[in-house]
Image (cartoon, rainbow, N blue to C red; front, side, top):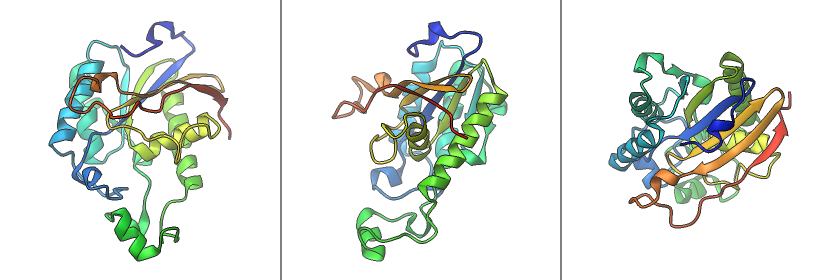
Length: 225
């Protein structure tokens, strides 16, 4: 069960951000970005685990990035919580950060091509990413005000939300978002509160249990225009 579920008031909106499962490019540590790479076998097993975690909980909607690695997880969750595939809401503004000319590269390949700290042509800036993600989440919250919504997306998207909501305490370069982890946000008016970050309870005791404790925490901030 998602922590704090029982304390939701009629005015609160709950947004639970779920990262997709593992892909071959994740395993190879390639910059995946907007490349449409499917889940590998491990990622499919992770999707089953997060769906099992959410089975029996009540949600009003599922919103998802349209990329196949994300939709596969959204569909697995939908089957568990009885939201049919046709009701899953795809949103292009939830796609992963574009890594421009470095997409598909490993760190070594990127360094060889552009230098360790060199600028990557056509990469989406953090500023543009943060604005895109917060605009998307603000629209989702407005469309589903007072409801409980699962937002299935990407590590970069979740970190962009964390960066803005926590005023930089969490987010880019500070939080590694685990595959199929849950990050829960409570919205009440202008106040966006982090209820949990990187919740991976459903991975404990499995082959996917993280070797180190995931970054967790909470914080509160008002959405900035």
